[in-house]
Each structure stands twice: as C-alpha cells, then as structure tokens.
Length: 452
Image 1 (spheres, rainbow, N blue to C red):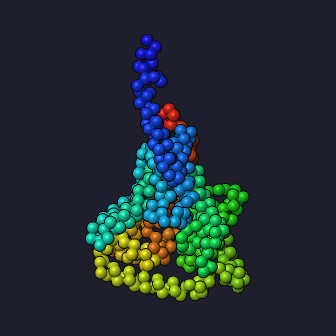
Image 2 (cartoon, rainbow, N blue to C red):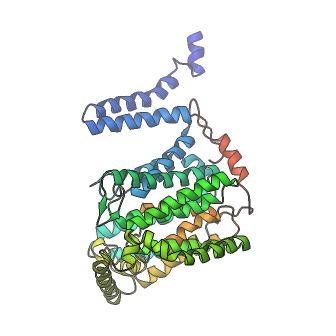
Image 3 (tube, rainbow, N blue to C red):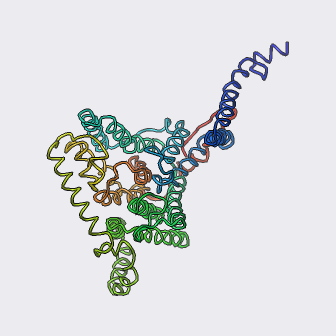
C-alpha cells in the first residue's frame, strides 16, 4: 500500500520521478563521452557541467547576469581573444547563453519601442534582404545582414524587455571598463605595439581605440550613478586611464571624438556650475597648452594628428576607399550591392558603407535607427547617460568600418532601456527591489517573479 501511495504521489520510486531523472542521466553520459574525445571536448564538457551546477546553485537569472558580465568583459577585445576564431567569437557565445538564461524574465517584460526605431529597423531589414538577393555574394551578404540585425534589433529589444536594475547596469558597465583595461595591460605585457600604436588584446589599434571610447562613455554614465566624492574620484581616475589608452592607440578619429564627447558634457547636463568649471578648465588648458603639447606630443594619436607616423599613408588609403565607395553608390544607388566585406572594408566610413551595402533607402533607415538610440540623452530618463555611447559611435562611425562590431553594440544596446518611460531622477528602486526577488534556484522548481 505504501508503495502504491508513493507512486501515486510522485515519490522517489514513481515513474514520474524516474522520467525526471532521465534527462540528467543522458546529459551526464553525453558530457562524459564528449570529455573523452579530445582536450577541447573535455574543456567544453567542464564548462557545460559548471553551467548546470551554477544554474542549480545560483538560479538561472543570476547566472545569466554573471554570463553577460563575462560578455561585457570580453567585448572590448572580442576579435583578438581567439585568433582565427572566424565570425563567431567567445563574446557572441556568452551573449547568447546569457540572454537564453534570462529568457524567462525577458518574456515577462513588455516591449517599449519608439516608432522611429520600428520604422528605421524595418527599412534596414527590407533593404538588406533586397540587396542580398541581388548581390553577387548572396551567402556572405545574408550572413552579414543577419549579424547586423542581431546586434541592431534582437539585442536591443531583449534589453528593452528585460529592463535590468541600476545595480545590474553598473555591473555590466564596470565589466566592460575592466575588460578594456585588462586588454591594454595584458596586450602591453605581450608587446602588442606596432609603429608606436598600442592595440591591447584586439587585432588592430583602431579597435583598441574603439573600445577605449566606449569605456569612457560608460564611465560618464557611471560618474553620475554615484553621489560620494570618493566613488566619483575613482570613476574619474578610470576615465583618465581609458582616455590615455585612446591616445596611445594612435587613432586620430578616436582622439577627436573623445574631445567632442568631453565638450558635450556641460551641454548635456545643462548645469551652470558644470559649464563654469569646464570654462575654467578650458582657460587653464589654453594657458598650459605649450607644456601639454610638449608632454603628449610623443603619443601616437597626437603625433599622427600632426601628420607624423603612418598618417600620410593612412590618409591616402582612406581617400581611395571613399572614392571607390562613392563610385559603388553611383552604380547601385537605391538598394545597394549587399553587405560584402571585400566591398566595404577599405571605405572606413560606416555611413558610406551602409549606402554601398543597402543603398540610399537603407541609409535613411539606418540614420533613423541611430537617431532613436541617441535622442534619449537629452530626455529626462534616469539612465539617459548610457546614450553617451551612441554619440561616441556617431562620430566614430565616420572614420571606421564597424557596422556590427560587438565592442560597440554590446554597450550601446543598454540604451534601449531608455525607451521605457520612468520618472526622472534617482534609482529605479522598483526594479532593484524586484531584482532581489529573482534568481531563485531551479531546484525543485523555477520561480521567476521579477526582473534583474
């Protein structure tokens, strides 16, 4: 009788319990088999087993946040972390796994998408498909458009529905900053310097500068997230370090964009005190300019701004690339010729690249999409300063081929939370309170009751 009662109630000896254990046994057997095949298989099995254990101990939501922190940590140098990895990188894997773990939370959220974004993204998608169909390299173009739409559409929408708390946003932002500094430190130790230009763990000084710009933009957000002078001093110190990395990269475009970004601060903050302090600082800078030029004149970017180093050769290549790009637009102006690397890489201008790839119609849609990301900086949303990353990209995009670089789009995607209306000022206390309720362990059941 006891046995019958146990079976009916779903006890340990019941068929239901045995069937529940079966997937775990099969997964364990599969991992053991994979681990015995090769060293890479063994490492993969260990990682997968660790994730299952983490999900059991931490809960899927908390593990998802930790995974995304790893994504932000690796994003600044994602192209150079695994040489020869191809199109898909470790950062992409962490991004997909992180959001997959957060899927129960995301699906409970609601989309708050501005009409401008929907219109622009639709135009880009349709133009991309038309250009791909007419392209001589249809498969390559289809892959490129897929990656582009993933970072420009899928990723921001996921963030918009997730609506992470301020605490989680800070963790992600600090992870990116730490990743860039780690890239610089390790890259320098490994001797990653070419013609006086540092490139960290990336595969080019311009990509290193790109990550430095994004890190500075995130630090502008972090500065206003803290009230105490000690915390703000720490943020400023990291800002100086990341700004120095941009100079050491030798990127003239990044140096100019960095300067513009800093000048934007009093305009964006609309503060008389901030404006006065910047005016005083500007006057001091002019007075000390002879000394400062003597100090920084040997850095790669300043030297190249003055025409030294490889500047002349770079100018020639860029000029030729722009002329070639304009000619391609004249040949196929409406819907473009497809997103093909061979056509785009030497253009060094995102806007012209878009016109070449998906035509003038697609370019209009792209500009509308970027506008929808950038506009909230001048709104009153509590997280509006995340949009500094977009404004950095607007300037930077005119100097490089970077349509779907994860170094850019991973931090930029956070700005999608600004599309959901919230009261101005302070922390998003409700989201933070809900975050404490989430991350329950998934044994014996999954309980997701809020957002993290």
